[in-house]
Image 1 (cartoon, protein in one colour):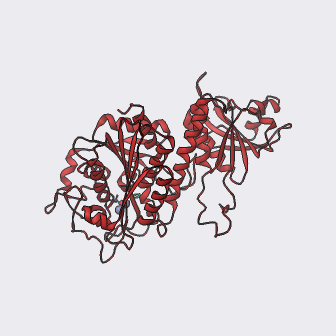
Image 2: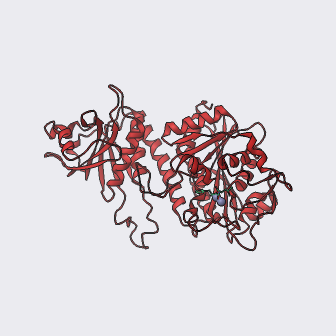
Image 3: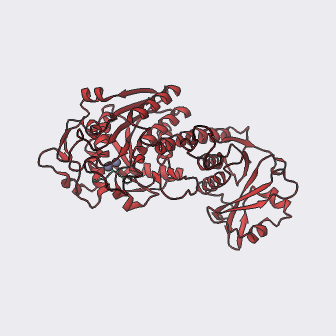
Length: 508
Ligand code: BES
Ligand code: ZN
Ligand code: ZN
């Protein structure tokens, strides 16, 4: 992953492949952002005019390349759009910096070293640019390497090194921001790797083994329930979903504990390593990206490891509910009744509504420990994508204040999210003539129906939130900002922020 350093060096003398500067959209054309002073000076104060001539506007996502002026060791200046200029005396928005840094890092794939001369006013800005660089430089090349050339990312290796100019290597706050950004984004990129891994390689057993290795490396306690242990424990939901697959399901529990913790958070992730729909098979056109159905579990895994790397003073338990949803002679049929870990029975009307079944068992297991709050993350419903599009996740909760806390945490870290309700009247649509509840209800409001189903499996009195990330988990379009094509790692940063807020005693 891209190595980051803080540097007080002046831009001209830096040996790098490129100097990255920011351009904002001013009222009268492009404006060179603070940080670009040395470049502007070398252009005799005409940088804004030069950018204008080249067609730059400062719009978000825009990249303009210009030859470095005389006296610069680096050959190239890369000007990235920051969007609108901030109000007078205000600094640039952290998310604008993150996106600009991400676009630059991606554009510079194939380069060895770049110096980022973006407008930094405080440690938070240092963190934002650092995050943008590592996230934007991400590429998934494991399966392109042809066994020989590990650099074969469309022929270009990710940017190897980034120096953040204006970052102070001796400033404790700057150093802490850099360390935090590094830990969070490296783990987030690992979550992206897991999502991008093909489902023939990442089955439940393989995912559990990866979690085990990482947990050991970071001092996290790990327990894996295999199919025998799941059967012994009565995990009917996870077993029912996994029964059609040649790869058996797993429930992984990751426990990060801090000796200074006052609170305990539980994160629960949907980990369907492939969702074919089961007997209620998905039609062609709806299954090509279904390796992404373990994105919730990947996010939970990454967040727990990040919490451990950051040494947060909070106990965090991660639950990965791993199964492959396949049709076969041993698969769960529409009409089957499953006895769940909580003791409730569920009539399975549609085997494609499998996420709620594995989550139900994991939510109940998480509830047994009586954590202060539970947050589950799941690519749960197509309905949530219809409601919110493919960049925003829905936030539901059994507590309005907690829903706001989660939503605000997401906003703070730059993850688009939106609060959604859990209307009680939708519950009766899941009444079953034979079991305690059916796994399907009314079609309208399908994302909320799924949320209401999950709510039934949260222990009495436990604060709980549900993130339906079906939209933003997997980017089928081209890359944008610091988001690559494929697995995005959505929700990792929100979970980490929630853990930080909880450690600080600020949980709503
Ligand atoms: N994994 C899907 C949801 C999904 C769809 C995620 C598209 C990402 C992109 C989930 O298991 C599913 O199939 N849900 C059904 C539920 C329905 C049968 C009640 C859906 O949303 O259609
Ligand atoms: Zn499904
Ligand atoms: Zn699914």
